[in-house]
Image (cartoon, rainbow, N blue to C red; front, top):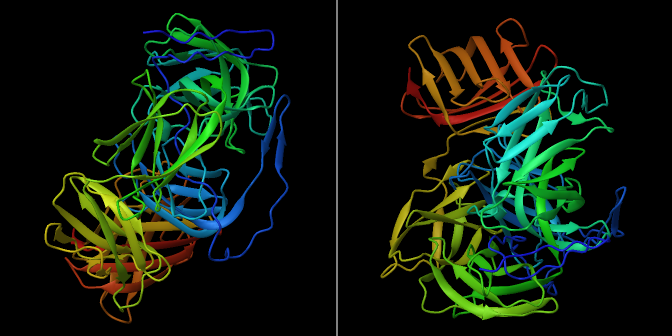
Amino acid sequence: MNKLKLIKTDLFRPIFFLLLAVLTIATLISCGKDPVLEDPVKDPVEEPDPIVDPTPEILITHVPDLYNGDISGKVLNENLEALAGVSIDIRGEVVLTDENGYFNLRGIQLDAQGTLVIASLENYWTISKMVSLSKNQQNQTHIVLLPKTEIRNVEASSGGMVNFSERVKIDFPTNAFVTSTGVSYDGEVEVAAVHLDPDAANFGMMSPGDFRAFNTDSELQSLLSLGMAGVELRGSNNEILELKSDKSAILSIKVPEGSNVNEVPLWHFDEASGYWLEEGMAKREGDFYVGEVSHFSWWNCDVPFSAVKLSGAVANENGLGIAGLPVTILLADEEQDLGREYTGGEGLFCGWIPKGENLIMQIRNECGTVFFEEAIGPFSEDTDLGEITVTGQNVIEVCGNLVNCDDEVVSDGYIVVQYDGNKTFIPVDEAGDFCAAVNVCEATTIDLYGIDLTGGLQGLVLNYDLMIDPVNDLNLSACDQFATFFRFQIDNEPEVLISDFTINLNTNGVIGFGAASEINGIFPRVIVDGVDWGASDFEFGYYNVWIASASSEIECEFGTCVKPNVEIVEYGGIGQPIILKITGTSFDSQDYLINVSGILEEF
């Protein structure tokens, strides 16, 4: 198979030849062309001037297209399992994922040209995804977070090499570290690193940004990754460390299998803008690309190329957009895909592709089966493919209304569609209505239930036989099952949500609930010694509170801080639901709020 060669000129303008064994570009993002809105935008925003963010060599030019809209998504771990309690920050709006890894923000300010979605969870690598959006659909994104499992140590005074499983290597000089405030650091340095292989499944969902970049000539590029590394430096007190301004380190990133590129540009991820910026070169030395870097975050070995935007919509024979479908673009002569993302609520998708190349578009269902494939291109300019109609597939329309226990509409919730081991989520609108076309693979039956995010309740799981049961005019209730959660907030920081915990009551009236996982060195737990839990005049004496966020912690034992207020929202005894709300102030005047909901077990 022919391979890519990278040719360097004096101005370093790489010439990109088509054939490459390892080829992964910008993930396709759910979006489409900007339509004329039928309804006025809520809380209209004034269009700002274009953002021009200068760096020493590069001008980042981004022209915002602001509007008020909706975005939802799910966050998964490396095994594609749901991650609960992930903090999602979109332009200052913060929400936590629930037990399904799901989040939904509605009516917030978004940027159609690229909105940063920042996903963070303790002991995982934070990912900032750049998502291009469409103004006429509930936009979706999928994110995979990787755990921080590989840690190495080096002495600041002596420096030296750290090796991460022969995939990432870093060689530090002597006396090279400072704190974030510029104070020289002399002690043990904790180095965390992670390697992203462009051949890995779901590489695009693990990677920061969307592979849009600016080169040293301040030109917008799309990138072809040949390997990526995230690096974080911390001191003995867990403080963030940086390299001194006059120091640099040698970074080595594993060469992907099959690559014969000998020299490639280095790019670092700019957290503020969401773009990759060119900075330096990496040369191949054996099985590694090796380059000199002056700071650390995410670094990427990439071939840049000119790109055009491709967009379209996937719909069933009735013209209803199909949500949640992975769309993949491949080079016609290669087996390696160029990235993928999921269609939004109206079936829209878009992304950046190589200009002037013959391509193949594949559409898969959630089970991984390709049910649509077509040759497309080449394209010399931005192109909208229009509506792509798929027929003969197991596509069902799931529509209806969701109400709560008081028969009031659920305006903040969603529907879960379960089939063949997969889950598709359909958000409700402000009237509690929902409607989406879903490809359910080969399933002949599905399970459905609704979730009320405000009330913390979900409906019973209902089974439907697709041969006989209609699912396009449903009336569902999110009222039947108890939602279990342990969540708390310290001062005005984002809430911390824990789904893996227990609630126990012993014979002496002591209730304890605690997490099975550690946060910031603490296993969050609360102990309350009460009398007459079911009585309206409930009183308690002894108490202990241990909770922690990523940046704060409270260890509050009886007699060392202000007695908290405990409100019993619901109590039914052993084997029954219990809901508690606890508020208080720590010894150093930190306010805290704790909400716990679950089934009470006997200790």
